[in-house]
Length: 81
Image (cartoon, rainbow, N blue to C red; front, side):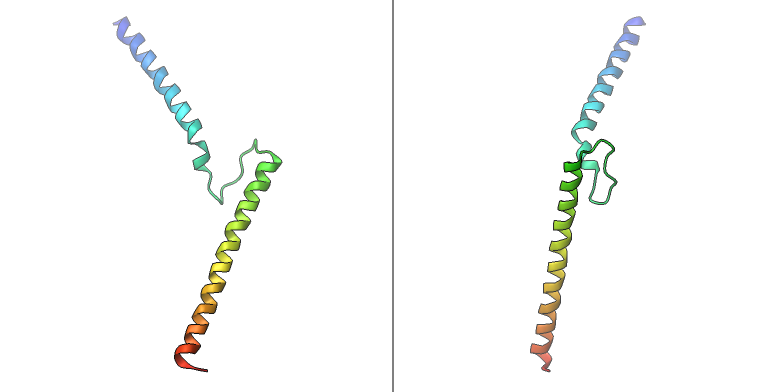
């Protein structure tokens, strides 16, 4: 009986360590573009995240503007002025 108890305790400890290491490895994937920054972030990490967001927003805005201009040109080419 005691062997089973110690075995299950050891197994529980192994599983807890495994899940803790897995969580540490995958910690960075939990934070998305809109999530709040972690408490222990440094200034350069916050700055890098802000620059990343600005790049994404810039690319999206340029894409929307170019699609709008292409649509306007296609409209005038099809129906005339």
